[in-house]
Length: 291
Image (cartoon, rainbow, N blue to C red; front, side, top):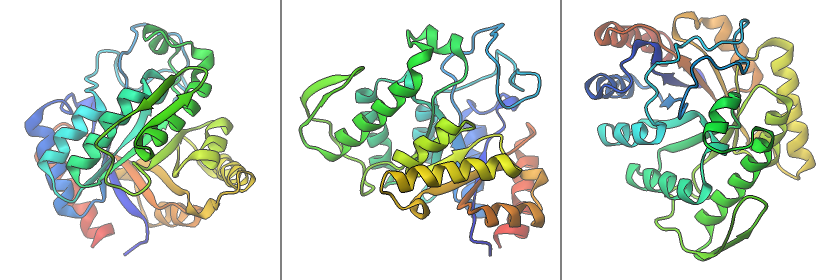
């Protein structure tokens, strides 16, 4: 068996991710097949006709239509937690600047507690300016807000009475319970494609989840993450690396390349709308790669 773990991203294009019977069967079958985790994405809103450039497609547009179902990722993961027993789950990615960290700390801790410590939160700063502006978030401040959010989350998970004075958020003697089950709080994995994301992962992340990168650029970003970790006095080898791909395209060569890069996990996107066909694809994948 390979050292890398396998996670699944459900097919948002199918329009079934918000259908309870479909996503329940998807998650339960993934668990039965031995997949490590299920990852979900976030867009609180998609602004029709947006002009911001989507960084992961040549034409600058998402591959999903503007009206695609995007259920709230944390509510969706709470539902999945109640349908499964061992399957881990994560966000890939939560748009962190769109959230108030005091409220988010409670929501994440609650899911982690009720699931028995099965949550990982992958975060990004967002690329759609119109979406952030709809939430009264200044696009130019999203990186600084994300850094402060991470500080607040960990402080509230760690301290019984937390006090924080920042540029965006401030509070005195805040008591936030329950605490997460996992020691040190819910793992925070920093995602994205930019050098800033790589450096943020190195400085403060429990993991690095680069998106849309391969070859020399991926190696460059991993190097930037490691350099930032060392500069911050952290062990770069302790920062988990999560990479992505398609279930249908994974082969031995791609798996070996991911392992050589140091990947701990591969989040694999699925295609198709028929749940029986999707489960059959999981079975075939598990026989070949999971054992």
